[in-house]
Image (cartoon, rainbow, N blue to C red; front, side, top):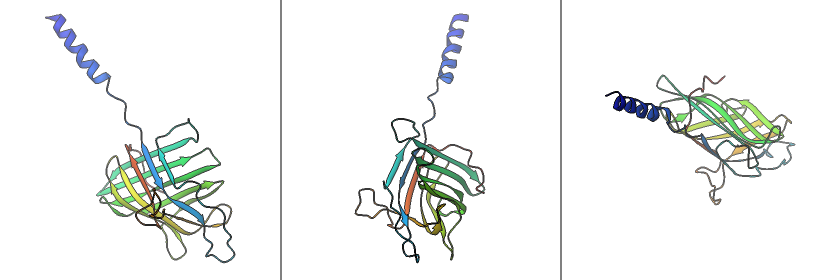
Length: 197
């Protein structure tokens, strides 16, 4: 009797001890950025070198990719924090944003957007208003996935240049639903978003 019981215990332990590892976070960003030449005195300062950044975190092959996504249930909605950066500091390109959403879709509240344009960057930009800012729209979110859009207008980078961040024209293979809104999507998110500050 002892041998069958021992074999059964070993099989049960192996079943629970050999669970597959969690799937890595996968991120996608379709966007455009440049300088806002509608501002008086503002000159052109280059546009997005690539309109699409996607994949899981990696060191090789270059360029490196930092992919992160965390979603926490909060009341009747979610707090979220995402990041998708390509390249090594200080020459990174990509975004990091956080915020809250009531329900599963709508405009994010308490949102902050960081965007990196190589050596230039904007950091901690709140929701847009009369003086400019970044708007974040969540299309869908649950405990492990998030899809949304964002755009920035009338914000200055660390080199004091006026920036715009938007979408990709529909004529492109990576075209966004709305040409003036960038799109992002993350899968296999974890917990730990915290509250956006």
